[in-house]
Amino acid sequence: MFFLPVAVFIVFLVLAGVRIVKQQTAAIVETFGRYSRTLKPGLNWIIPFVQNVARVVDLRIRELQAQVEVKTRDNMFVSLPVAIMVQAVEERAADAYYQLANPAEQVSTWVLNTLRSSTASMELQELYEDRQRLAAEVEEALVERLSAYGYRVVGVLVDQPTVSAEVQASFNRVVTSQREKEAAEQEAQALRIRIVGEARAEAEAQELRAQGLAKARAILSESLTEAVTRAKQEGLHEDDIMNLLLETNRLDTIRAAADTGRLVLMDVRGPGSERLVVPVPER
Image (cartoon, rainbow, N blue to C red; front, side, top):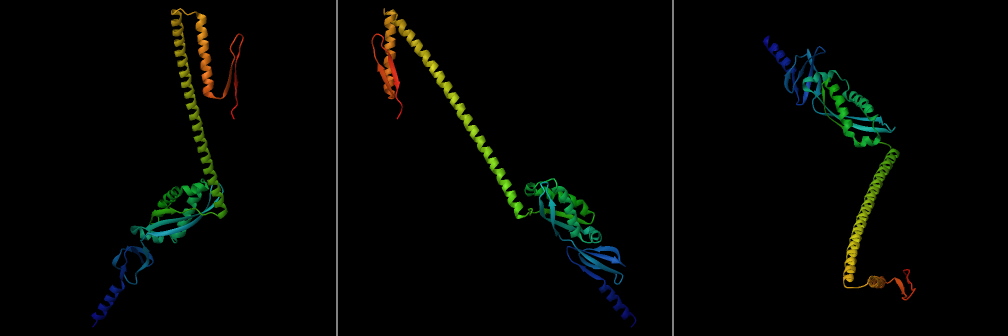
């Protein structure tokens, strides 16, 4: 009869010390208030009335959010939403429990200090365009600090800055003005290229016309020289040859005037006569 109560007591102690730890958690065991060990997921046993589970640490990834108010280099006060993904390391679950009383508040303080030092050298437009840089700086600053307390940083996200409606409208006007300035500069550059191209083409055309005219004059000079030489060989007098050339030139002038249709040609021949070409204005 004596052994039955003892056996019941032993069974009670065994059952009282059984602890079941769920997956992705770790149980912190204390012996008379002092840290003893960490229980892993599964079936575990502690000494009843001597040991107790002080805290169950969640090993899943947690999202810590912070709304950070910062000031930019161009004196703009901006609110930056920041989300930090952290996770307690299973092997260091005790540090995660004992070292930080409130991880969310402590992380928010570290994020605030990091962002204030980073954004102080940035303008408002840079905050919109280079949020990846801020996220990288925050992550770099948190990795070393949180690792000392049993946490690891999974990722950092810096969301779009939030400013007042007046600041947003002013910022939009600045961006629009810059875009208009860039468009005007591009249009001016295109106009310059077009003018330079047209001038270059006109210069090349004039050069070709000059070359053609010089070539035509050379051919005409050779033709006239050959014609005069042949006329002399035929026995014509130099005065007759000169009169023939003048008459030919006169007839060519009359034909050119007729083709143009905008000249009145007065041709009075005889001793002391003069030839007069009067331009007629266009209607």
